Image (cartoon, rainbow, N blue to C red; front, side, top):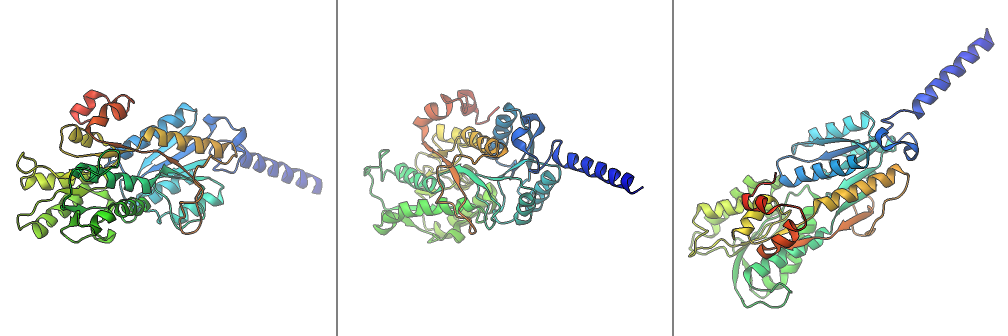
Length: 379
């Protein structure tokens, strides 16, 4: 009887052992290096579908990974933090082997990241650094401080204070400008803002640039969730409070194309956009197709192009490296301290786009077609 009990117990333990070691959806508990791509799942959490940019990112990441044979669970959280938390929880529960997360709030996923770490699921922060957690394994993004520098340089060029090569322009000012920043809960906002304001400081100091509203602190100029409508409302308020004396806005530092379009709408609603009262020089970011059309027609001045195809490729490369039990290639291991650790990162290049750059940077590269630029809508 005793021998029969031991044999039965041994058989049960063997079955349990096989169940723990085999099958898909292991969530990092299996040897993923020995698994076929089709047996592995990568969870991709994107913040919203209200922005062209994030739709393009999600699509690109999914296509890149599926082309390599992996299963992809792509979810959008529609800018709702509890929704994103729930979606990531679900990905972990359902056995994701790697997580790629573009966080809505870079500090709001601590419990999910701990759950992932407990199951040995690598976490890749996608474009937005996740803060306050030890359990972030890698970061793929662009050089976000340089994005801010490039936006400031684009504003200076749009105003004529600098030429395309960075040399001194023909204009001297003083110019009235206003400053906008992104959402404070997005870590990138701080890099963009600091890069831009550091670059503009000499022009503030010598009087070439004047912020007529005197709103120059990031907390004063930030737009929650990067919302176009909120940016339009803030610009309307600025026009009412600071430009009711007949003064004109000459330039606007805008960190994102959606914000730029809100600013443009507010300006057009009070008569900007004519030969006698032109639209100010307005910067942007992400080369969203609606804004590319505005640049092509002379309404928006510029945007910063961040090729999401390259970002998706790097996210895919990092995922595959982790699945093969390797460390992803990093080209920056010093800059991105999330408050708990320095997260190794792979940073990609950026490109400033004015009207003359659209053909080369966006059309010839296959990012958009000429027809899409003309229509202001991607197919």
